Length: 143
Image (cartoon, rainbow, N blue to C red; front, side, top):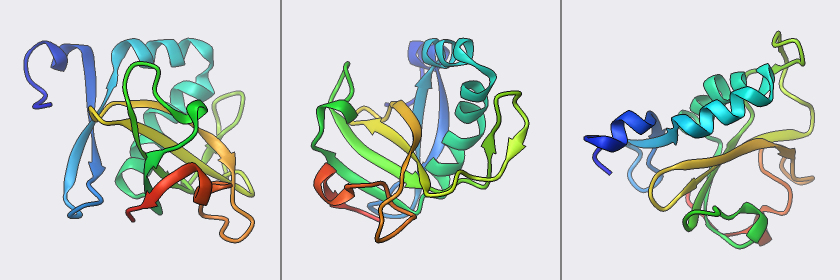
């Protein structure tokens, strides 16, 4: 997607590492999705605004080929999962705290370059920088 025309008005574009060549690519999040997330809580709004871009731009790992339906996009084909440990978390009152212990932050991006889901998940027992069961959840690791 080139980020022009109607889509530009409907979505926010963020920089994300392209795991194929290390350049920066664009990932989009629809304004509708951001508003829905923001209505849930200040924590969800701040995660969308701060943690999602941080993980997209400085991931520890990027996986491709989502194997679990729960991880897949309802409107398209799930494609990549960016993951890492962000520099902070957010408390219920919106204040900053340290990252959660034994958890990683994951951002799912579909094959159209749309971030459609993001959340904290338990980390793997063998490498706390990766999500639990990463070997069986994804087809391959790109980064």
